[in-house]
Image 1 (cartoon, one colour):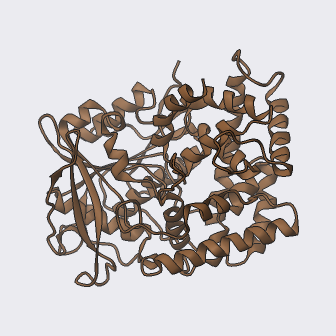
Image 2 (cartoon, one colour; image 1 turned 90 degrees about the vertical axis):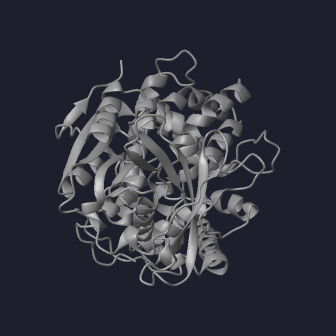
Length: 497
């Protein structure tokens, strides 16, 4: 999942003003693996606004713990009350910065959590400040992102193939040493070293979106070192990569329908009639952008192609608080102005105002491509895109083709391991029923696959549930993390009135 919900939440106000290696599992004891290897400790330095920052050395290859090291960027906000320990955070992606997420700790977790825990964020290996994977220049990324990712001619397929090959080759040229070692299992082993370095005998963790996959992998590798894990907006680890794409495309369609139903009741909605007729207008908009790009008022020279338009449409679906912005953006786009959709797209892919990118797009593909066995020829993506478009006509092809660089990736992805975490204490899985990026069925699936999974459902919209407005979800999460009060499996939190 390429989402970083925090970026959307933080930017809504700005936009409004601007536009108004897997290995064997560890045993259940502390043993000699994980956090005890090397005995690394952290030297914290003040880094502003009450935060402290540090670097944690970890092995590049966990099979060679005494070999080459890389450093992880780590940040913490010390507990303000009666401290229990630390809570580690991961916002998802893969590729999202945990350091930047933790910088927003005062809105990312409740005051009750901040009172009792040091809030610790980290950039996973290959991400942000932790030996980042780099593949392309910012101008090259602009070109890549703008490629037609729902090609409807042989020439467009060829252009997409060539762009995907360039992406993979650029990663090999600039980051080839790192690429075999940026998978989720490697990051989970890093997390165990971090757990030990902050002085916790067992892990307390909040992971959202892809962060649920990281947390579940940790529990599977180190079940006896789990204290409490909240996995919010879960990924289903049993699915193949193309099955993930298919389900996610359907999730965006469901979220779009929810947005349109809400939009049609608003006075500033650019559509009239039914959800079906509004969808038809959006489909026509995408076709127009494919034939002739929308205008771009930013002055940065980009053309607002179908791909940029689709990204801009997807971004606000992650958070219902951004739906008013989407109404404005679509109203302008229907008149030919793609500027607001372009700005929204920039949020999702972490393109800065100066045109520079964080490495989120690059690290996202680097992790995904090594985590699972993607098809190695474009014909498989073409077939899957056609099939996905039957159930997800607006997003199916786009989402499917977005994984094409993995067909040319210099490191082959290994098989997905079975994740069940036998012997772990209860693990809380939270799912939102109309989540666009991680469909609710994925939370159901992960909770059932984990030997101690406990499912909490939320009748809501948007990506992830904790601190998005449901006092029911927030109370259950906080009580579990602080007091280890495990909710009843299958608990359902009602829709926000």
